[in-house]
Length: 294
Image (cartoon, rainbow, N blue to C red):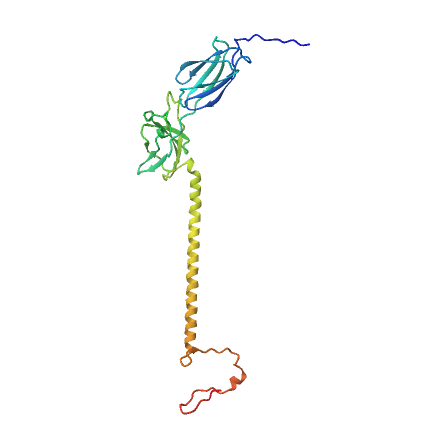
């Protein structure tokens, strides 16, 4: 035996499983489920967004009959902090969550130029890639001294460069540039960091791999150069020996050249023996003595 029981919907229950689906710089997508399964009528929700930085509130109304509701909260600020409350329109029990939007990106191409008694920090305008950034907001610069283990706020500027003076010899510094923080330093951009040593050689963290590649090249290039020089010297030595052998052979051939026969005569050594050693040497011929050739 069985019995079917239909529960009476309780509109005083809170929405279920409230969570964030996706968060951007100026928006957040949130999702929740109705207080009970399979609503048989449209349900009106109140979405309250409290700005924890500006201390302001906004309320949005959402009507849906679906068991799962997805809603996009717009017109948020990059790097902001918000408290989101969702409840039925009759002010029933609520579900809440906190959301932090994505901050502005770090400035690109942060570089250092060393002068006589100071350095200059340069970077690209953040407005080139961030439509939500206005140059009038400006940038703020921080410095970390690794030897003293202290961080100092150097100031802010609306330009794309900043002058830093009074650096101490023997200290290593890290400079960071970011979109200026708003409302008591609670809404900041991502920082771009650059390392700087006492010799004025600035290298950012993104260039670490290229720096290693440069070190390898600094070792490989001289070795290749020495190999090429060694090969060149070897070719010169071989060429000189070849020329010397060629000259010696030419001198030897000229010394055995017969102008009468028009060629050089060499002894093979086969006809040299004991009989030749005992035979008298012919020193010359007289013009009136006939010579017989067999």
